[in-house]
Image 1 (tube, helix red, strand yellow):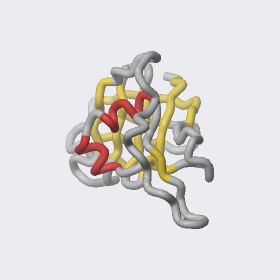
Image 2 (cartoon, rainbow, N blue to C red):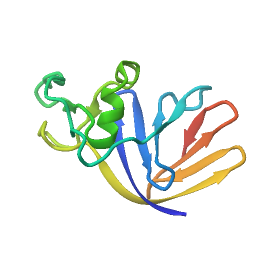
Image 3 (spheres, rainbow, N blue to C red):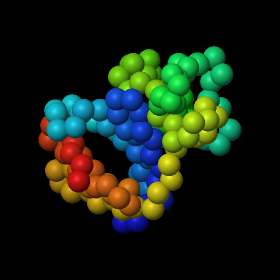
Image 4 (cartoon, rainbow, N blue to C red):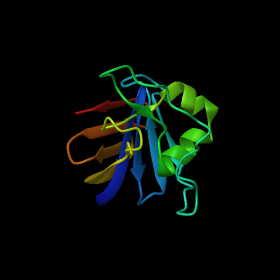
Length: 137
């Protein structure tokens, strides 16, 4: 099934929004048991996009710019100190801190007995439900 999703890359992980199921997939360590989880997307347009009290580290000259995730990803990230610690900061695609780290895509998703295939238009994520491990192609 085709999906219009969103994703964000973080220091130590990845988040993918699956709108058809109302889920946010959080990917930690690839090919390891317990390496991913699915969380209910509770974001509504009236929710805050970010929290000005949470300040990302200042980048070194020419270094990666980090920011807090925004929108639905930010709500999940801000609401869980464990996720913040495990995932780290969102990696901005720009040298501007104010630039959104969220990428929109047109992809596809297919559920199977043993997991889910999620394609973001360039990469296929294979999410296994038997041991909660994942790989990408």
